[in-house]
Structures are given as C-alpha cells and as structure tokens.
Length: 245
Ligand SMILES: *[C@@H]1O[C@H](CO)[C@@H](O)[C@H](O)[C@H]1NC(C)=O
Ligand SMILES: *[C@@H]1O[C@H](CO)[C@@H](O)[C@H](O)[C@H]1NC(C)=O
Ligand SMILES: *[C@@H]1O[C@H](CO)[C@@H](O)[C@H](O)[C@H]1NC(C)=O
Ligand SMILES: *[C@@H]1O[C@H](CO)[C@@H](O)[C@H](O)[C@H]1NC(C)=O
Image 1 (cartoon, rainbow, N blue to C red):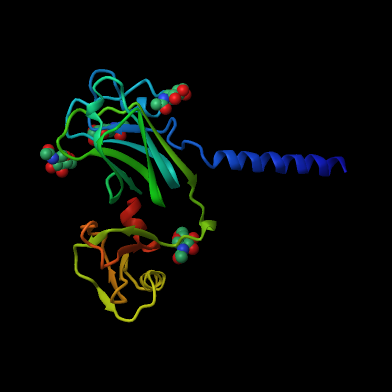
Image 2: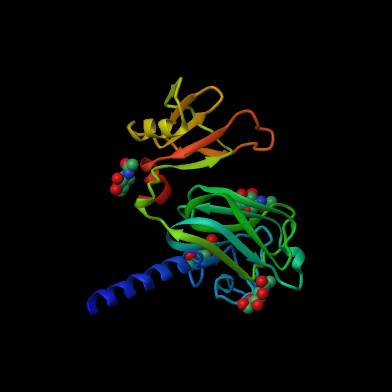
C-alpha cells in the first residue's frame, strides 16, 4: 500500500509538471545568433530571461534567429521592445523553419511599431526548430529585448505525418497531377507513397492534387487569393531538404 501511495504521488507530480511545462518558453537559453552585433549587444540577450537586456545589430537589413535544438509544436512567439529607440522594432516578420538555411515559412507579421511587447499567436500551431525575426523595409538596426517561444516538444504520437503551409505556391513544375482527390490528407498520403515526392499541393476548388519533387515554393499572394485554397503538405520524404542530409 505504501508503495502504491508513493507511486500515485509520483504520477500526480509528473502530470502537474507536464501541465506547467506545456506553456514554457522553449527559447530560453538556446543558441541565438544575428546578422552582426553592435558593440556587446549580442543575440543571446534575447534569450537570457531578462526583458531589459537587448540585442542590437550594426547592419540595418538584419535578422535575429534562435535554434530551439529540437522540433517543437509552436503556438506563439512574444517579442519585447526597448524603451529607447523603440521605432527600430517595426513591421516585424516572424519565420519558423526546420533548418537554419532551409525553407522557413512566414508565420506572423506585426505592422508598425511594436509596443513594450507583442505576441504572435499562430493561427494554427506549426512544427519547427528555428525561429527567425526580421523586418520588412524600411530597415533600421534590429533590437530585441527578449523573444519567448511557447511550444511543446514534437512527438510522433501527435500523429502528424505532414505539415501544411498556407498561402504558399510552388515555383517548379509538378511531377504528376491527379484529379478528383478528396482532401489534402489524401493528397499528402499520395505524395508519401510516391517515390521522390516531397511536397504536394492540394487545390480545393478543383480537387486536384499535384506532386512535386522539390521544396521550391514561395509565399503566394494571400490577400488576393481568396478563391483558391493553397496549402502544401510536406511529407516524411522532405526530411533531407528540410533538415539537411
Ligand atoms: C552567426 O551568424 C553569422 C552571420 O550569418 C555567421 O557568420 C556566424 O558563423 C554565426 N555564428 C554561429 C555560432 O552560428
Ligand atoms: C536584405 O537581406 C536579404 C537577405 O540577406 C537579401 O536577400 C536582400 O536583398 C537584402 N535587401 C536589401 C535591401 O539589402
Ligand atoms: C519584463 O519582465 C518583468 C520581470 O519578469 C515583468 O514584471 C515585466 O512585466 C516584463 N515586461 C513586459 C513589458 O512584459
Ligand atoms: C516518418 O519517418 C520516421 C523516421 O524515419 C518513421 O518513424 C515514421 O514512421 C515515418 N512516418 C510515415 C507516415 O511514413
């Protein structure tokens, strides 16, 4: 009985830990980098848990990025601005990707100057290992006082076999195009069963599924693209291109 009570207590503690760890900042203390550094205001200052120490680049067309060191299901990203020269954190773009140099998808945009802080709540949680923060023109030095990433670790048990990037269009020719395909799930599974297929494009209005052997795609015109649903399923086969060999 004593042993059982101990066991029960252990289980309770573990589930409490899991619940609280659900919302942890998975970027804290992770390796960060930026295009270049002004004086001593290095990239790691945005992941040191202190929202008063800030990064600062010399160059204006600059990015800041962090390696989360494993794949997380990312739900939100909060950025903290500096009091002085806060205008520098304007028109901020948030990217999530699987590799430092590979394809990264645009998951958020903040138009105008960021206040003390801003949270990008992702419309749908996405898997990724690298977070990159940059801005659209006009550029200035990039400063960030903290970047917090809310995520849960990737687990195969989550049952995700493909990822969807909305608003992206392929820039290369399809290997195959199939008509009368019922859903993007079916389309993704057609890709995973086809040798050399890496991404699939499912066009909902026409129910066509196009298979591609490359990750050559780019952000489409989401605003004016209201009738055509563009989503790309990245299957297991894309690992080489996403993660490197
Ligand atoms: C940081 O980024 C710079 C610029 O891309 C690069 O030269 C440098 O090797 C990177 N440092 C690390 C530790 O990755
Ligand atoms: C900004 O940097 C990106 C990535 O290095 C580059 O593709 C782009 O041409 C640059 N734009 C300007 C205006 O310098
Ligand atoms: C910065 O961190 C402090 C201490 O954790 C906190 O009290 C404060 O609200 C944070 N600032 C912002 C803008 O959230
Ligand atoms: C994807 O690849 C992993 C690792 O190779 C494997 O364990 C998993 O079963 C694969 N999933 C699918 C849907 O093929």
